[in-house]
Image (cartoon, rainbow, N blue to C red; front, side, top):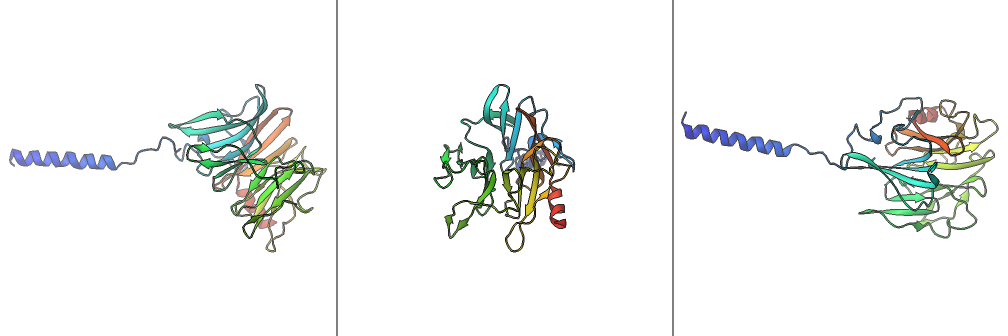
Length: 291
């Protein structure tokens, strides 16, 4: 074989190799891999476990777990120790690692809308922008008034709001009708039973509602409950989530991850101490089948 032919073959091989190399996918430094999502934690089973104990659990009180739908940002509330007041904390995936920072000022308990475009903060909210979040805005006089003591607002994909009201110790709701936001109304007694009910989570498809309540028949200071929407649009009987999740302490602030895989909740031991737990959310479908 001539030297010219050998040279051409060599050059052709180098070009092909370079093309194949260029086609190799490169990792987005701001997008966690499958192994890195959920702060890189090993998924829990059917028994609740502390969430990210080496990253967020400390002598402070952590509560209100909320991931964005893309799982790149994790928001929660912290208080106690050096955090004299409620503080909104975010852990974001940047440059191939999780980075913690504070989101000032604190305006209310965090809940992220199913589409990720709105960060609810009680009677306030922020809109998603190209650079992060907008300035704090009001939900308007229908919600931002002295008659409603809102702590948490939860929203479904179709815009239904479910909110608590510490002034009535009850859970309320607000729907959209003919494109117009309706005034909030108190939910009926199938939900609002006990000394108080609070911190609701409405499923993205409106099919179930989770909240916490203090009742004489409960396991601890407060228990987590679930109700499933019936075919006629009413809510079914409240179901206690059981002693696998509820404990002798105060269990509250339930929420489900945007992918529907995990249930997060807070357990308070008294004072400014408490942790975030997570557990496989398949128990929800089991309860739905036996309701």
